[in-house]
Length: 231
Image (cartoon, rainbow, N blue to C red; front, side):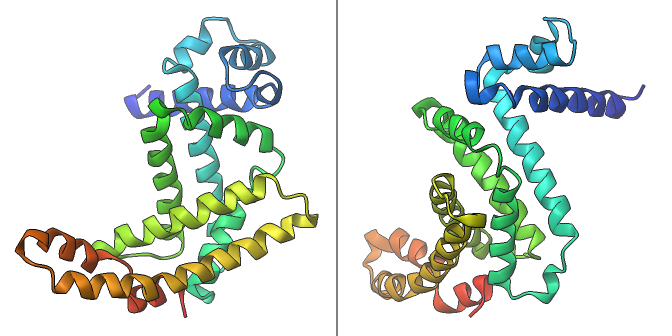
């Protein structure tokens, strides 16, 4: 077995363990107890949990997010995204991502609680970046300049706020969440009206404040947002 085959096998086994643990997480949270219960369901030896997830709960949550992100990309690949406007592509990506965990809200809440701990905030930001980056790539983003960062910053805000709303949404088919999502994307379109003033101020900044001017130039402008989210 090659190294690549060995790594793929390990990933498959790890993901199977996390998937098996999902039914226990609503009761036990993201805990070793839930992972061990998942291992028992798969008839794995007790030591397999430590072998497959040496990083413990942290690695289990990373695996869960990456599994779901991959499924999102697979589903988006089946859609005719190129025929949509950019903002429609992004809305579709967010809806697809949330729909994949529609029946796992308690699991998602538990993961968010874990990631909200101070020591886990960097991991939370990294995972969110990974998710929105995949959304933009699926939407056809090919930017390589500062727009690359702007797009991901804006979408992280849209995705995060929509996720929070969606978790408590009890409307049929999450219709209220999708209205909220469209409104959030609409709000993003209004950002340039505010940042435009900041950018102009940056241009006239004195030498000690040149850094502020440079940052202002990287902030969303009307043209950038129109290109990124569509008019």
